[in-house]
Length: 539
Image (cartoon, rainbow, N blue to C red; front, side):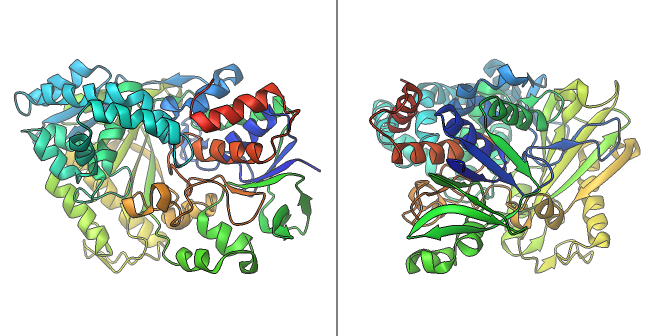
């Protein structure tokens, strides 16, 4: 009988399992898919000579995460690579905003749009440098982050806290207008905000765009050498070295509750795995409370709140094997691992408004990845392993392009949308389509079939909007990993602090379980983990 059962071998589940194993617990991880990794996996499915990430690719949050740093995954084979430039946002007129690896490089790019915008960027970066230690501590610890929050509050007060707090809750369009005279800096902030489901006019999108931009400025957008699955392999290897186990092809369909306490799980094969101390669920919030735990064990208010849970946007992705580098009109884009494709702020707003109205956008905003530019091992010399994803509505009402995309995402609609994505790339890189050796389409239902947590292609575990963050995430008053069922902990991106590959929800859940089982004779490792949970930093 293991001390803990972890449902799901995504990055959060694997982080939780590793921390429990570090504390001396016996741990079994049960994963529904044939291989571990969740949304951190790669394959050779586009072309045998090309490595293609199935879901996520670039990991600034992983680079910043004290959780992952503490696991020392480099000791288990993980290596990172970076493109020469972090991010580019070209315009069809040939201009291009570049988030460079160096602040001065970014500043020079923005000065080309308007003199003085480079200094404005440097000032925003200076604020980040001042707040970064306390902000990262607060971000990656359970809510409320008492000690880390107190340190952050002191730094905010010293730096004109109310004015800065106002800036962080601004819509990103307004923040860009206040900080920059030209469009370059505005595009960097707004494009990064749209990594999540935050429209340029959404409250709080300014803070999120600033955070992602500054993470990129400080840590870059690194990629695991050899493919995203290298990160998952390192987590699995580390767990095995500490006696934990991962069992794939084991779908859990029920959490067993007795006397108000989670005591194990049941699989679709009819097997029961008993947990001596805890069950940790790296699953979506609706799956946990709407499927795995029977309603009789949950408070009525929680079930009422669950009906108000909001998913983030759906995602449509295309992978390519290209016979050569992308022929960008703006040469600066060729150096970047990630390229944002929208012809200005108004096109970003138009894109987000169409999604809000339930329309499949006619000119989709694309996040475009040049993986061989970041990691040359991904494809043969002189070629490019590339992808792009865009957002679409969870519920499609109509097609803004009037091409008949209805949201059924059958084979015909997938091809129509993939062609639309390629036309958008062609606007910024004429001749792109002539380089395509092979392509693969991953529509929202396909993404969900490969990872049940990506419901409708939602990649952030629920909306990033303010009404479902902090103590509202995943539901009002449930900002911590503990649940209404004793011994059951939410360890997925549905929990605070949310989406991204950083391991914090898994770590928070593991530390909550360890804290619950502290004993007078606990090990030194357990004491260190408990202190880390309380303070948000290693002692």
